[in-house]
Image (tube, rainbow, N blue to C red):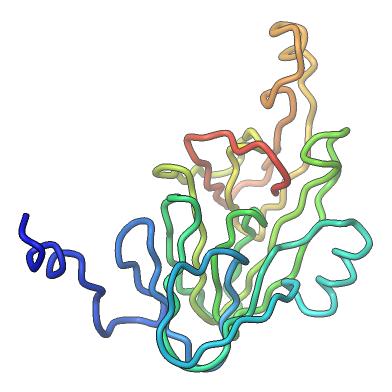
Length: 220
């Protein structure tokens, strides 16, 4: 491939919505005011944009983080320009939430969201010593664009369903999970495993997003 062909083929896309995928792993965010972005996700930017690290969810989120040592690791991009964001080569998914429409997302998988979106950290029931002492997710309510990440292509499952916490990315806000422990898995395998702990979405009428990957670490 010639140099100019490479440039033409991979040139960033002009115009389009405020949150626009350049490809499956790179997000182009138009900043005109403020946008919340995962800390460390910026790979490039143009224009007059500044970055300030803050805790997702405003003062409510800050108090929850201070009390638990957990929280969504986010920063605010302010000004006018474009910010290009990515997260470890993970796939990026963009949603536009309508007014009052909401979704709960694993705190580690939230990539970005518009300032018009209301965000709140929701602490989940702890599962023994798993996931660094507890689980959290970010409850996002529209209107506005949001972006989240997955390892590989996700699948959306209708509730009721039980899932592995390490593979669970997001779920409908009207179907919060409870947690169960299946001792049979531990007994059968002979050691602690992800399948021993399960998220139980026992209400009907909702959905759960799972990825083909078990992401070990602090998550929702």
